[in-house]
Amino acid sequence: MPASLKSEIKYSRKLFEAGLDAAITVRDGAPNQTLAPELVCAARSAWVPAVIGAALGVLTLRLARKGRSGRGALVGGLVGAAIGFGGGFGFGLREVTALVAQRAAKNLGVVRDARWLERHPVNYA
Image (cartoon, rainbow, N blue to C red):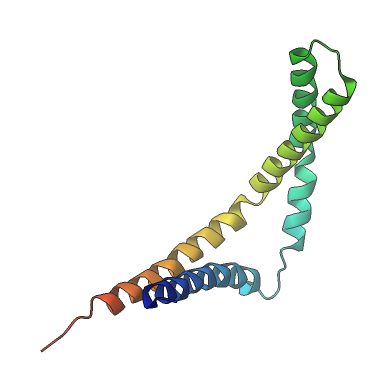
């Protein structure tokens, strides 16, 4: 394996570890708190977008096919519900996601800076 490829693999692994470390830091950041209540609250609040998504999925396929396929409308409803639930769940966890993103950006910056210094050594003489 060429040395440059090994270097790129090492760098990619360090970037991945920096992002993962950010998520673990947020999870472990508050010893008295767990993320379980926030997950449950986000899941409970996601049912409204899921219902709206299901209704839009059924309506879209029923109107597009002029009401011929009941099975297609069911599939459209399930897809719409999944998209709506995912969107609502993500919106409910936006504060946690923002915190993880901030810490990940900071960690990734440290890794990128270290790589830059490795490739461009500064000689003080």
